[in-house]
Image 1 (spheres, rainbow, N blue to C red):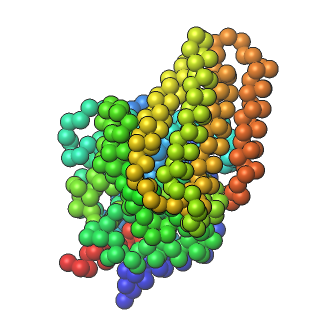
Image 2 (image 1 turned 180 degrees about the horizontal axis):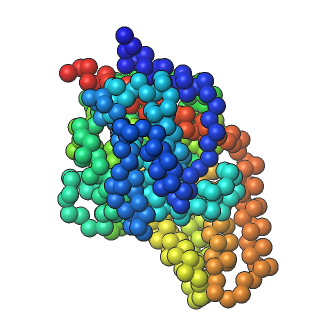
Image 3 (image 1 turned 120 degrees about the vertical axis):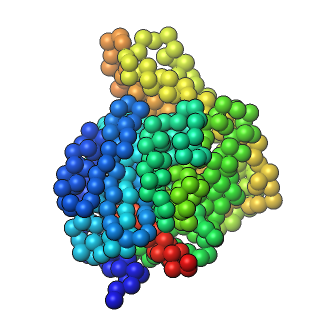
Length: 466
């Protein structure tokens, strides 16, 4: 008789033995993709669980006859579409590949490919193309805290809280109906790290799930991707567990950090995340977040000690962040009296809100230095500060170019070309200073699926304890 552990191992090996031909899925193509998958198996259901704020459908799959519930959610953050691809592939694997079909006898799967179709649509200018970092940085959009679909859940089912997005209401009700949920996987991406990174919340403690973490580590080794490492000292709820793994952030940690900014409205923008929601309301004992990078540089995970005090480095980070935010403010100010297209007006207001959010983060950062008192910075911390400054400069240059293209007056082609040239120079400067290794979509998806399998392992192990 095949054990659950053997079935999970067999599923991973079957994935390793086949070539995946993947591309991102746009919001406009998502519904059709889900409908086509729904024809694979009569026992599988595809439900329209709600609509987004802009009226796009939110779809979810349910399949499997096993006693242990597993929830999988992709694309909570607008600029992280790999989770959509992973979720859709997971549906196909569970219905078409024998090694994965066996898992449906042990588990029941509840899968939301995109929790944020509006954000996915806002990123269509780069999602619709083969991935290119330059095009990504020119067109990327990410929701700010007030609209963050990951940190957007009411604490209890159907509780009345202002500004809860309909996406969160739909997902929460889907999770409620799926309860009890043994493991919850939220599929995320990250732009730059020192390697693959995973966030974990577990009951009674993480040590009980060593085999699940080891499964992920082996998958990263087989894919040739190093593990990320850093130590945030618990800031925003990020506590280092071991190389490659941190605790999941919490609403309490986010609020405590931004409380130091004095921006009370921003503090209330943060609500519990999906991991906290299911652990509080759906009897979930294990939740994990994949943070698979678009590119990595091993220097960003080099934990070798330096002679620089960490709090001094954070002061430097704050000084450099002040400069780039002031530069962004000047860019925005240049368009206050300009008649913009509707899309240009959206971006102008977005950059204004982004600037306010980042300045609050800067004030909180400079008020949080005691956390690092007496500690030395790691080499990766120095690289991280340098990269953060370079990234902000690229962001500013992209903002200036985008706004220049969205005026109501006839386009000043010469000025737009100049601003695009400035963006290219900033972008190349960032690339030149780091040894970025790009991570293919196929590798990102394989490692997100390894996190899903680790969740199955954790849930099965937890079930066997009772």
